[in-house]
Length: 301
Ligand code: ATP
Image 1 (cartoon, protein in one colour):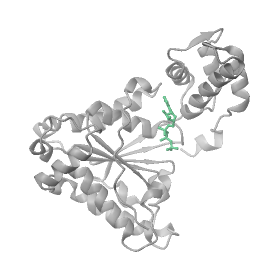
Image 2: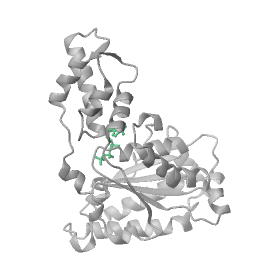
Image 3: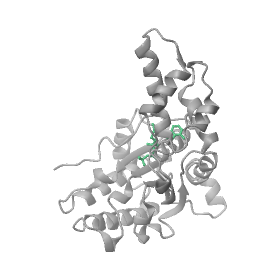
């Protein structure tokens, strides 16, 4: 089984305007992610050490990944993404090698955001790991890399770095950025979890996950804004998005995206020439796209 770090550079840009609601979370992320990456000199001037790690937690489908992608787009930094499942390998040393490769790549492409998705699936509490020590080994490799981020910035040689930069020409790296400039830039680790209670405490120590941000389910105002995002540019006949927002309690952002897609498909099924989506199409979509959230899920957080 060969798992390489290739292909983890994510190039899909997302703008803050593509995200409905979550204003407070966006503000916190701008402070924790954008400021240190965009203005490292300001942190230096004030004698502040920039956060090394940020943890986003909350129910699935509520925008954690998309928020980080938006922060990367806005900062024009490389966005590398890898999930807990991709890191898993039962072969001794395989997962550690992958972590080391991903961090090496993140440093070489700095400034960068290294996004570790579904981190709880692989790094549980040490006392509770039932995966033959793989989680423990990954945790230890991850902590080593995180502890070394500050020290090893700029470790890649100029030519190796240039090669990586060229290889990611479709990424967020601006062509004008020189390798020398990249030497002083940093790597920010952002992890996402649906089960923060499952994470090992060692990951939460200062200097590791310095900021913890809750990304909760959308309230009625946020649902209205999300529906507006996904119906932007559509012809809407007799649809009141405010009313729809009231009727979609327990729908996540992902559910609302599916709902809009389903309503548009209903309109097209009726008439392939259709240019507008009606209240009735949404009504029908509501019967097939059901909410993912329950009170029980929300209470876990
Ligand atoms: P998971 O924990 O399952 O990985 P997540 O919290 O990372 O989920 P995303 O993958 O970011 O969620 O979102 C799933 C889909 O729902 C994406 O297509 C995203 O754009 C959309 N979505 C979720 N919340 C919002 C929102 N507030 N505004 C716009 N789109 C949203």
